[in-house]
Amino acid sequence: MPTGGATPPDPTDMQHWAMSAAKLQKMWLDFGAEQSGRIEPLMARLADPARWPSPWNLWAGDWANALPVAKLESQKALWDDSVALWTSIARAYNPALAPASGEPTAELPYRDRRFADPKWREQPVFALIHQTYLLLAKQLGAMADDLDGIAPERREQIRFALRVITEALSPANFPLTNPLVIERTLATRGDNLVRGVEHLLHDLRQGQLTHTRPGAFVPGENIAATPGKVVYETALYQLIQYSPTTAAVLATPLVIFPPWINRFYILDLNPGNSFIRWAVAQGLTVFVVSWRSVDASLADTSWDDYVRAQIDAIDVIRARLNVPAVHAIGYCVAGTTLAATLAVLARRGQADKVASATFFTAQVDFELAGDLKVFIDDAQLRMIEGLATDGCLDGRYMAATFNLLRSSDLVWNYVVNNYLLGDEYPAFDLLHWNGDTTNLPFGWLRGYLTDLYRDNRLVVPDALTVDGTPIDLHRIATPCYIQAGRQDHIAPAGSVWKLTRHVAGPCKFVLAGSGHIAGVVNPPQSGKYQYWLNPDDPQTLDEFIAGATETKGSWWPDWIDWIRALDDATVPAKGRRAPGGRGDPVIEDAPGRYVRQR
Image 1: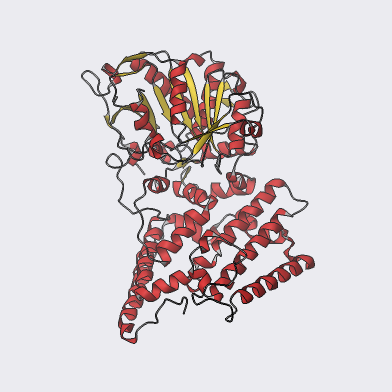
Image 2: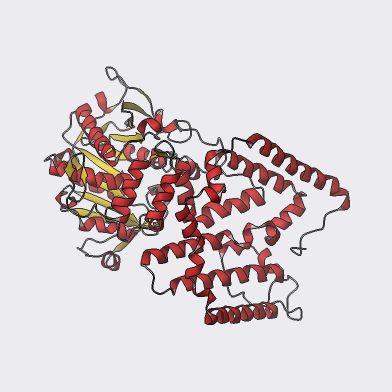
């Protein structure tokens, strides 16, 4: 028995077991017949290694050759550590010393939250399985750290490959080595496996891992529901203006440029954590760009087009409200693009169109960029090009990539809970957004990965030209507010910090607790996390942290105080400040059509 509390199946229940087996068989047969000759394209590519580009096979297949596992001393050390571990487990479960609860008499040497449930420790066989796995994972990681004579980027690729493979091979991910799955299967007489296969087949049909309950969220109803109007659109984006909730608003409006990877409503998930709704409540006239998920008609979209779109949106707002300038926010890749936009405007003598620029987890210097750099070499770029169709990269590939960066949390956790244990999915707005993918123009993506991530040309004055204008970030004199997440693995704080070294104007750096999403989406009423400020003039992130003052809670109030300190003039919230009124034709209600297009 897997655990002391489990009971064996009653022979009278065999009919139920047989029904569960029959259901499983029928589901697989039906799926096979349904998919015959028309396998979902994305799944067909990922499931057939023969169709992967050869560089990927090389990268995925030769990582073991670089490890010192074949060395005699490495093998001896691994054997000695294994024997010591098995001996300690045997002693811990000595029947003469074990308590009635079945728990070991001593602490097991390795801990991991995947094995936190007591059932992993109640029986020695499962303790031995998961402890041996953790030992092997630790040893392989140490071998990767000790590699000599290889390039740093190659070492990071090997570390990443090892982490992905060892996380995939966790005993928690297999039904016969996971005591929780065995116990659930016995208790439900196989019903959990039936539900799990239903979930698996649903994901195979849609070509994407499900994280949240399907149909739980609908844009404009219970997500992306802040009232507003689409006041302008092009083939690439819609411009949304939100309805004011205060009698007076700041004279200088705000435009937010979200990333075109996923949807804009990461900043408008629900009323309780919506940055957009909160900013409106602070008396800002808020505009947001909703990017279109590209198709073949937009396959030639380049970085120049995104920069032109930002300038276009700024000019449309200025003309619509008859104001000289706007405040601008750029998030992630849109923040990188905003830096290029500011440099273009500065070179053209039009820098005064932007009163201030705020950067959410945005990088311009990619020397210390995050985990995505493991995908940036010629072999990986050829692999990505092989996945593009009609000049576009299916957004599900990017979703799979970001999931792999945290595969234990975003892949295998759901395999265990929803495929093996048969649990139902939660209704979680953030996870819904995470899976609401957008297609990307491959030409833009290739240039972004090569020019910025690989060659780091954005920080070299005039090395890049956008819309016919050379880019020199040092020309940016616009006041900047730069936010980074201390635990961000996509845009590490050390990389975001470098933006402060490349602009000429005044800048304020804030280091927020948590990561790429939670570090940004942290409303004041949540009471979560903290942020750090340093009023001095530190030259490095380490100096900033050493002299920083920690403040509990959200950094949003600090940001709005910074905005008001730049210009606190107000105007009545009427006329075109309230979109859709008399004499103000609009296109449609927020959140618009583009956010719903696949």
